[in-house]
Image (cartoon, rainbow, N blue to C red; front, top):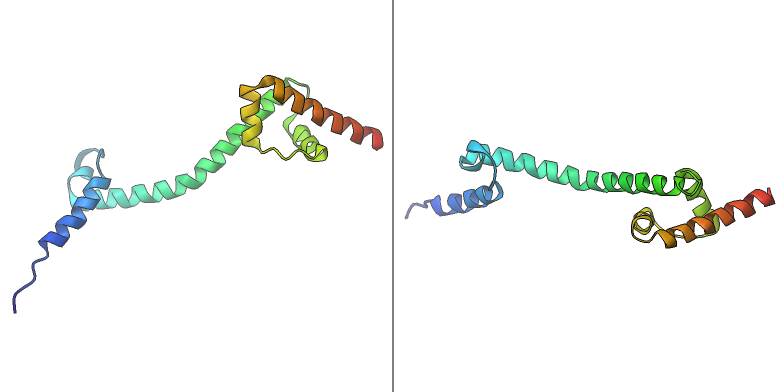
Length: 124
């Protein structure tokens, strides 16, 4: 029975790892043992940071909204509470983009929220 040589399979697996390690510094890009460890770690970081990106962007939108709303005499938390009372279903990403790109439309949203908050205060 002929013996099986596994070089082709190994080279194919190594090639995949080296392709993923492209751009790494030093031995991490051209030595299979170091490259495999670096690629495995990079995959863990990528998985973790896909989750963290969502948190980071939400925090950025909140900061932008807070700054934009304070120009109209409200705080972020009061504004978000008024948004719910006004029955407006706009997410933070949309509101942030509105505040940056279309100040007039954002001002109209803020006035609607202020109206809802004023009606709430008068009812109480």
